[in-house]
Length: 432
Image (cartoon, rainbow, N blue to C red; front, side, top):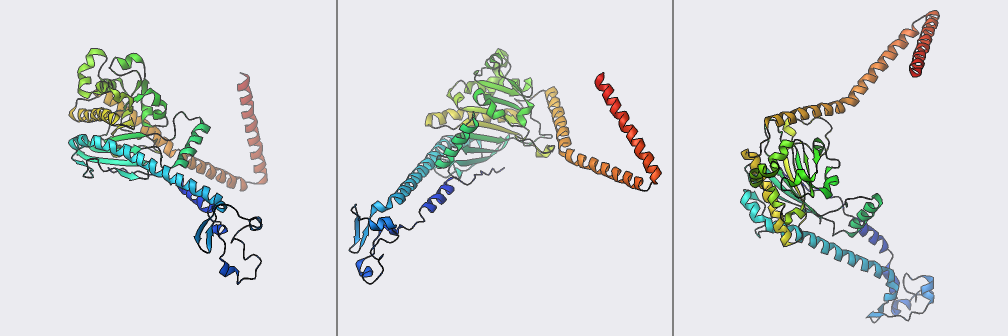
């Protein structure tokens, strides 16, 4: 499944428009008409610089000037505003190209390191014939690598989400926004997200499991629909007994899933841990790069209605802090190996939740789908109820209008007594 990388219009467009407005005033104020033209003009302003202000025209010019021709002189002192704007433009362009080059360097460095592993694991990997992988760019900070053709995995998309180093204005406004909102997580970070599309099954139920760095726990869990199915287990004993550093938290829909992906506590789960390799990878410097590992069969964003079985997209999502050196790129490959091992484990039955756990997952999804259906039809049901009440009121009004004056008076008296009775019953209830 192809993944499109989207990007909003950069703040640089606004900067360019602002610079254009500053440069609109004519630059002719720095030039003086040649004598062969002023000699034939009778205007008292003929000898003044074109576009000069009255004050400038009355002042003698004794500053530095550059002769262009025998009759044309350039006076830089009259270009102070334009010179400043030009300097800012040049600085902006230098930052833009330097930032863009830096982002491309990071993405292509990782692609070059990962290309041998990706080529070995996938039948089809985008390649630019230079061994770096074909990194598809959208703007200066978003990029994508796509691979497909592997048993147990429909496709892999590696999405680079980098800081907008090429757009200083966007970085500045984001910084101001983060300070103003006291955000714990910056608006822009250097991230590498690898999404493995898992094969579909009869009901597309895999269960939901995640391993998340505690420093990114709030940002990862905030607003995510699929992780609302899980419970957090961040106790040191539960984590370290499975060989995982205590800097990570476990989010799982069932304790059985934890045992499947990380092995049972202590020596009982050692064989399973060796097959999957999560604990071994996190004993290396790769632990500094891992932000989250999520296996899910539910959408990240809350759907507006129940998700049909055929529309569920089971996936494994590995989110890394972007490697910025050759050593970090090498370390990140250990986590990529872990993701591949999990894909193989799911395909070969090494990772297989118990029947009781799967039944619980299906029951939970049926209950959630029922809630989503009620939410999606709530407005429709309220509209139908209001329509029925309006029709009832209209029918009663028509019936009332057909009554004689005496019958209408008796009807009003009866409704008044009913209202008084209801009011008295409410007062008694409050007193009790």
